[in-house]
Image 1 (tube, rainbow, N blue to C red):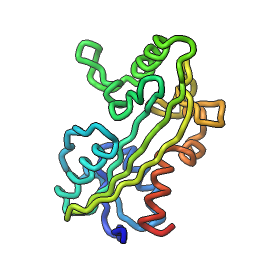
Image 2: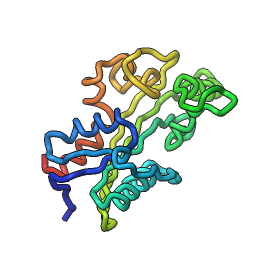
Image 3: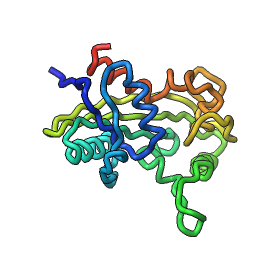
Length: 209
């Protein structure tokens, strides 16, 4: 039988206030009291995995061990068919600026340009099929864990369009639509996103909803 979360404190293994707000809102109807790893002063573990599942589990297990509370982490990214699934688990790394490129941080336009450059190198008939993946991992202090995977299919567009998204949203056109994620209202995007897909599976198993 699958272990279930109660209505007590759930650590969200992130130091990103925006991500905490988004996840807490999704879980609000089901009872858990969400607090971030950042608010608890927990260290950020090195994401040394080579898959979304591995990295999500690394973060969830580190937070659960440090806090002695159930913890939830996510790992997500964009994969492009013609690039053999890259950038995939290294999605955020492709946006990292080097010291000689300016202030440290992430430049998502630069990352989108890297992908487009590689696609153009494949020629005009390059397969632009792509997909966003999201893995949600729950870990308990005793080592037990559960994993939920979500995915949304789409096409890589160029040039980027829209201002309402983040990351690679301006170049991702979800299947069956002709606008990018960054051109969709937040509520509409969230209803069809990879994270929403993963959360539906988590909620169904953990809360029977």
